[in-house]
Image 1: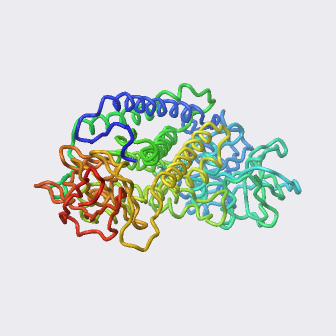
Image 2: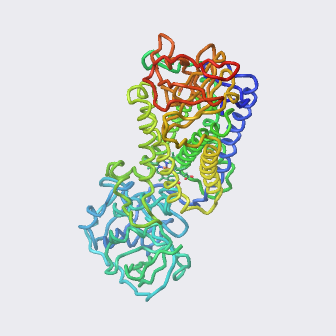
Length: 253
Length: 353
Ligand code: HEM
Ligand code: FES
């Protein structure tokens, strides 16, 4: 115990010589450890991939037919250089602000919508501008394209919020991001299934409930997990929609 | 020592200690935040807010690991004792780094919504019934809560106000904080990574903390004196020949109570082993200019009456001693703190006076 030869240190007195070099070594080791840790942890973060807001496209204005079920969609009838007619564009409000209440009354009408595009590869979404500029009702009834059933599929993949996934946030998927994704989904942002094998050439599918309605609250537990599911798939415009069945879904490692 | 609660004063050692800590922490954050984005060969950029949150979160974890290593290291090798001294400042720093981490997260993942971000943090993920997808953020909140209590009560005023025993107990919350952070990371980012470099750093750090605690416990068991289990009031401490001028022998009296028997000017005196400041091990200290000096923060006591010299007011209990042959025995019933006990004179024959 106390009779060890170790030099004795009292805080307010000088540090004994023999301890000085020991403490210097410990300090250097601590400093080196923190330096190495920073390089190791900082430089090894996963690549979130190329995605983001396309402010470089400038504000986009599209005309099309609006559908509000299960999520806000625009069937583009008059496109431009960036977005072609026939495309089904998913819509979201600013940030995590719900827009369904503003849109529901316009379901089936022709509208002019303007905002900024988010894009990750084939996946895109339009963040509708705020105020009157965002949505203009053209007071004309349009035709929503008929849905084309593609039958039953067995898939593996992950349910994300389509907006963060499309680049609103990087990283914008996964379990560390789950709470954020849930908060988006609560704000009418379309949930998107990222399939590990393409379905009819598409990797990203909109998620609806078994009756084609919005993604049910009880299913939020599955967001961000790697899943295996059996599902009916349909095509609406050029968008694939997956009807999620609570009985035919399971999380896998 | 203290007049009222102003005890351990600022001095050059404290400044050096803090300077080394700050240099390490700033270098960590600087490299992580400003240097590593250019080292990574990623195709896409991680948002600044998430990158910064990761820098501060991982830094707070490393800091907490270092803090927790100091205790067992000092028990295994006394040369580490100076690190124990003033460790509190490091703890307060950790809280601020942790808060900054949480701030970046709150103002990013939980912002941009009409909901209040603090409420959103609590309601947006409620998958408490599953491990994968568990709202790991709650463990972060819990850890931050513990760190805040520790930082808020870190000043010596609280030590005095709450009494060292209760203060020490509260400060075991550091273990709750560490375990929470381990859960926070294990259920969070570790579930979600392709590159496992951080995972390795994390597991190695946590293992070092655990193994050092285990080694220190084994060391105490081997070298700490076993419980004397005789029902007699007199407990054997050691042989006279084992004592050295200016130093002590420590003996366990009960589960919580230890006595330190000092030799000073050839005479023996016994005081409680627990310093009135923060329960530091007085018996591991030494007598400097006639006063027992605590190895932790240098509080001093007169070995004959367990009292700090005026103007200080700290007192520890004293114990009565006797000799039987060449064995030193201590009365397990302590005297009230500050009670004077005539030092036991050793005669050349080894018999008691
Ligand atoms: C209100 C409190 C807290 C919240 C809401 C919170 C939230 C989070 C979130 C969401 C992540 C995942 C970030 C990502 O996407 O990479 C994370 C990671 C992490 N957190 Fe916290 N946290 C909190 C407190 C703490 C505290 C007090 C510590 C440590 C003392 C801590 C240590 C870490 C570490 C080490 C990581 C992993 C870093 C990495 O991603 O590389 N957190 N936290
Ligand atoms: S001086 Fe702080 S515990 Fe003894």
